[in-house]
Image (tube, rainbow, N blue to C red; front, side, top):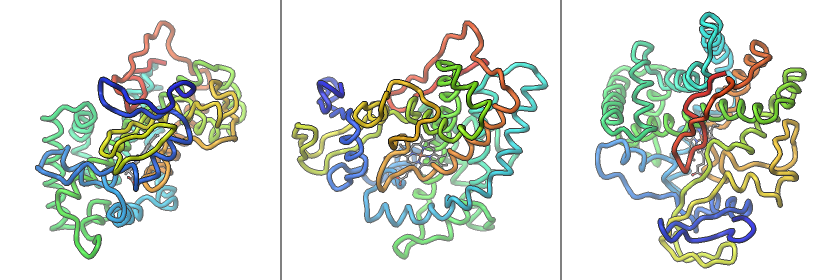
Length: 355
Ligand code: HEM
């Protein structure tokens, strides 16, 4: 597609599909032409809560909203989470060592980011199991579970209003955008966005890295021997098996892209997964090279919506994978495993990964 139809309208969905690196980069960052707005919230459901969150707004409102949450995700604040993340990884791998069996997704890659975000949001430990169930429900589109979670967050927001703590929700309640406090709906939107944007993506980054190693076992051997390759390995995994494969925009007016004229109001899908394999951008793009330093992948997006959680995702991956290298130096996918991919156009990963 990159060669022959770099920008093309899919007749079935009516969606404009974009495949080349430079075009994908432009769609992600040129918000004046490619808008993230999905309309103002209409009801009290999780979907409408999400449509009032930063990922679905354009500047200038986007800038004001982003400034609020950014304070909670500065590299310094994220680094402060490292000891706790290491403790959680230790607990999760400890359980695996006791049972002698491991499903890389279910035992490590899935629980870790959910627990971390629950703690950042200030979800009490006693509610964590229910929280995990609901976060699944949001991701899989199970409406009744999603509604339960929205109701739970609604109650938690009220509790924190009355009795603030040190957590992110209390911080967001106290903060102001354009001189106004966030509405309950907007607070709900943030909480749900952090769950949706932060959990499955990080789970897939971890599991996809194991799949990269499975396809190139010598790359695993190299990083076991020399852990200084871990950070380039993580970046290469983000490029090679991007957890977020595509992002959606709507054209704000008629716009020329890749030799095509796209009418205003058209849905556009920017294929990050394709851009990250663009041979014009990455030498030997179809090879997983754990030492690659050349080229900047778009796995976390580009421009004003660049992933807010990127430092957290990188930290979780680095702590978890470093422990895996130390404790499971012979890690391989269990023989005979038939991979069960997550059925989605947007995220790329597997539901289970016995190792
Ligand atoms: C935005 C990917 C982890 C929170 C994005 C975007 C991408 C992305 C591609 C851009 C969306 C756009 O342009 O419309 C990823 C990947 C992750 C990851 C691949 C893991 C490997 C996280 C985590 C969090 C998070 C851990 C938070 C806990 C967000 C938020 C946005 C965002 C809030 C919206 C930013 C904005 O609109 O300004 N992410 N993400 N992400 N991500 Fe992530």
